[in-house]
Image (cartoon, rainbow, N blue to C red; front, side):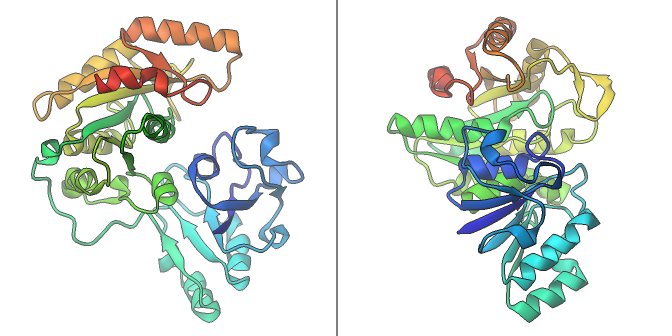
Length: 336
């Protein structure tokens, strides 16, 4: 499928959905929409993903099949400045795919246009209607279940999940990601956005994903939020208990000391955070933090290596930056 990504004024640092699709999806990305960077290319910012031109608006995009909203703002709202681009996409007979809490399928203007031009509005964050509470049975499957957890939001849990999947497959293992967020769903083509499920059903939705993941050896559950996050700790705990993981991988961003967008809340040190995760999961399904991941995107090579060494010493388990280096560096620690 030929896809355009909407990432206005956020690419690449605050457009994690767009970056995730660029890095891991099988779609042919024909353009990225970002008014601030129009005229540049994706490789000007991210040399290790698909390249594509960055354009000002949908009218400048080559022929494509779909427009993907590549931004996931706090609260999942729809910015009205995107409306002209969505309108143009529909008029060009492109499907529109979004992972917002604001549902395009409930927008009167877009629904009328979609019907007129015979295109689909796909809200990947809308959960199934038949969810139930958890039965506490995810731990019964034979595959080794790995859950990526974080010290905060946007610390690399989704990225780590797919990098670990690819590293396991390179070793000949049957591995899959169980997507719990909008970006993972767009990449894999299935999943449930846990943060939009009814609270009582969130652990049950995670349990369903683990059971439905098509892999015999390794299932990597994509984590969300963080255990001490003042806004998103609920979804983190539901995934932790619903997945009943065998191993945890703690993801952190180098240099981050306070919760993103909540600067009055300091992050616990990594060792304390690892212990918290192990304590919370232990009564339901004991698991240990068997590896760590550190996002060193903004650091030089020497700075990154020093930060990784410090993080490894703090956690007492192998760590890596899976984008800069290789997720295979921590795979043995997880599987053993």
